[in-house]
View 1: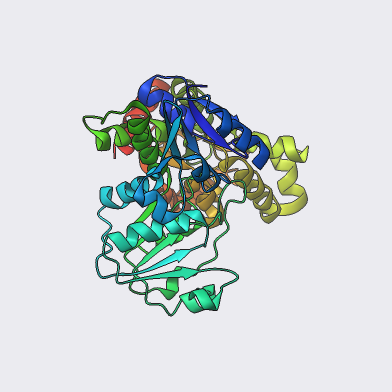
View 2: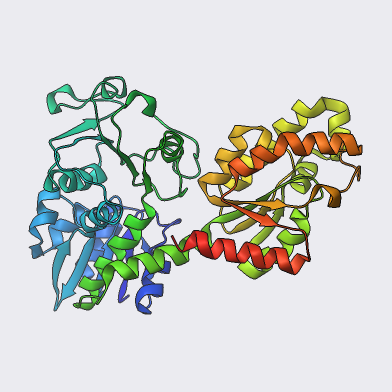
Length: 419
């Protein structure tokens, strides 16, 4: 192996995609389940350069002839370069988190910072915060050690923190939706940074956005640390490292995020969605079809047996199931916006587009229990339109051909992913 990543479990690593997109060299994922496996690998030194992830970032330091002072201070190495049999260790996680903060104008100077978690990423983010002039850096743990000055989550709410950094796995795939902190208790909050990168918006970040607080995902940090690691791998600087980070982050977000279509019944979500999915290279999922598949009954039969509340519960279950995955085009039922939990699920890992078809072009009936008459359809449209507009990242007119709507959707996605 020339270049690659070692760690105990590497199933969901994006490092291979990032490195190969960036530099074109082959990058191998090398899972080493036990410490003995890791030691045997390091003793052979049969590589040019590697990245290191959990749980070997400290272990690898034993094999390094040189350790960068910053990595030594943090107590973790995530990048190792083999120079004629001598191993040199660096920590580009520090550089990645620093880039994330700088790229979005997060200033630590004179601020109180709360860091959730006590593991290795805590040490990295704490070092960045202190180096950038934080007045106070507080550590929060579910099992705090008072001798180390750690706080409980209950104690953290009275800290007056202006910046919150999450380094725990709370809210990480597949346990999406978990959040340990009530952000309403932080009236001075200026920014929230979450080192979790799957999903793109954890529950913590969604809550911050609802409060109007700038919130940033760890995916850009992941890309940045890989770019800086590649500089060590190749012993050369990129002409525009920040530009490379931005380019790859945008490209991968576009590739990995879901696109969800919302809108009135018969607005064309399935028809437009299938064509759009093919153009985007995403798997098409019709959530209404998935409800029927999972339940074994048609939607009218579910309504007849369990009412709208029974149907909505099934809809929410399928939305939660599919929205946590990626690279999909989700065609949503017309009433999906009636439950806030559905919108949270769609936004955690995707972009939401409102397919806006004129009222007079919508179909009455058609096996749709809530739009069985013209009057019912008009009333439904008046009630739901504000909800569609509030939920959507962009509005896509659908008053012409399917091709027109697909073109408008592609243009809207270009705009969204360019920022």
